[in-house]
Length: 292
Image (cartoon, rainbow, N blue to C red; front, side, top):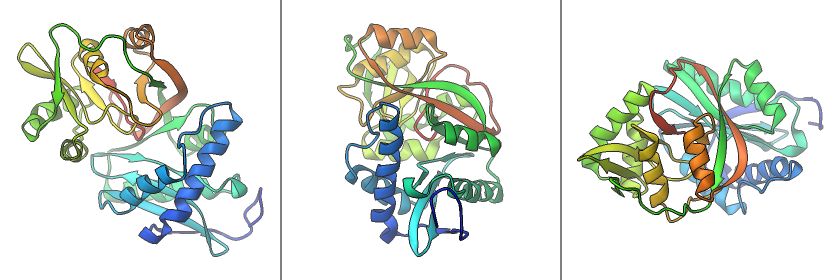
């Protein structure tokens, strides 16, 4: 295979645990290349971070993971979260030395075929806004732009908000949290939230004696749903730090976006939520994860 065109049709096959080192190296280099070419910090500070992430995903039966092979070597990978009625794609990465040769399209099509086979109501992903090739690819495959996002990092000046109590989530909070997710988005993310509770990353906010918001994690790989912006502000204020690059916020929520900036949080990079299939405009306050 040569840069710029495809001489041999790449093989798309299921990912295996032994593929992690090669896929992690590609993931690190691909994101580093696109980030730095646009003047942004790399998404991953070192190759070890994507290695840990991909090892976890490849071993999780709730995810569909594939790799692309060409000339006997791995040249890309794609993952899809299948744990909810809506499937979420990512991370997808292609070796920078063979980009623009159709490998990304093949990896995406494999995931979309799988989602159709399993009867998912929709498929979603979060796209790096300045990565124009991926924006064109996803749009050509049928995805629609739904929300401009900002990845934010820092620490809020306020640490608590009056009338709001934030605490770690427990198993007994799942029912109320799932109900919130259903009210905001029209479906639940039960398996994802349950795992977050087990992991210890999930938090809830209580107001007037009831759960009014939750976050599976206050980081880019977590999502949040709440009744109001006040509940999200309380959750964000409770965080000592936001893991990784930060958390994602829909910038059309001007009130919450402005509050975050007033609190001293900084914008790390712009991103875009894209969807295919079922999409109901969210009703309430919410934060997406890096998957959706």
